[in-house]
Length: 113
Length: 113
Image 1 (cartoon, rainbow over the protein chains, first blue to last red):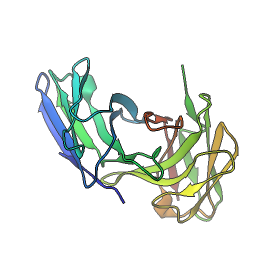
Image 2: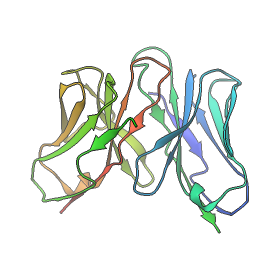
Image 3: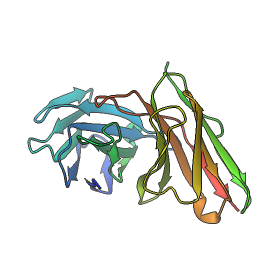
Image 4: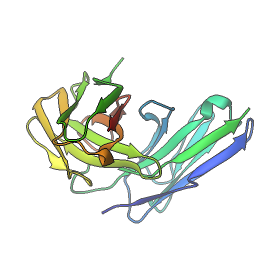
């Protein structure tokens, strides 16, 4: 089946620093999504990407749909303590159960005030 | 505000008990999903349903079953709870079609003793 490799697994940064994380897939995806999970809560959708090369921002967050359609990147600028949480990438391919998402294993972000 | 509601935030059950986890969504979504989340393993799909009374196995269905008698409700059943089923369980829903992400519930932290 489809697999996503998300890196890094964890990050420990100082407040104000920029953050980058990425996901790569073994197959082509038509949709890339980025979620954030606050401690003790369910994941919440941050950004959705639908076209290869697309670059989309949501406040201090910017995500890109890779040209090859096999990868995606999330950047967080000027991190703040409330950015703490687990960030998941998710992708959707074509054919079969095309409403089903494949998730990465997550990047745990810790921000030191 | 659209919602996915999981009936319990925390549950403690004994080994061998039959356990029901309930999930209700108010968005008229066709698709519903059950995941379990464990440290280092990310989100693993247990079962999903794309219509009332329809269900499909995910990646780790062993020891679980599901029920979807009404569109808004998707129940996860642990037939005979075991300690290795101690985990965070997340329910999600989505509209049909390729361009929609999932909306997650807040999760149920299940401990089997």
